[in-house]
Image (cartoon, rainbow, N blue to C red):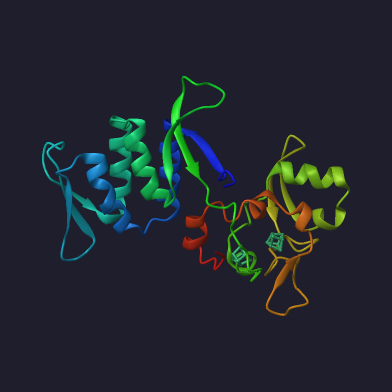
Length: 233
Ligand code: SF4
Ligand code: SF4
């Protein structure tokens, strides 16, 4: 069986990845409810207030029951992780739920003394249907990196650069914006490189080999795909 694509995170990096997930997908009450026992102990539980905007969190690890706005529950869980970072086995259970993919305790290949987690990305056999939905709907305006910009300069891709807005400091490009209608300060209504393929239900990226990093990295995980409406499997 081929080895699955995985990525190694230290425990601190895993904590930061959880924070990013909570920030990126704020409406995850079901997930957060499933984490409270892993984070606050076996006797922890949540009760949702009738107005559904608050929850009570009860646990013997807390001095008293906490009444929390639903949208602050994720932050409260993160604070508990910061106070008491779980051991790798427990962190792996938490991450398996958060990232919805198998996660196991592991040691860094470069430094065997460094404990962390191995996370299956689940993307090795991902099938993209070329529906173009991500290209039409996702917010990629601030996602172009200065490295992308420099790469296009090296390649002499003036056609692409014409659609890139830049922010400069001391003559250096420090940030980029895509895609700006050439000669204006206006964002294009849609990506200029997206075209219908021979099959009218499929779309192609006409700069596929040199597309921006943000496009290359989508979807980063199966959860990322699901949470952003990607129909790929
Ligand atoms: S939304 Fe998903 S399936 Fe559609 S083009 Fe993007 S990655 Fe492929
Ligand atoms: S550059 Fe290519 S991959 Fe990125 S949004 Fe445009 S068409 Fe899609």
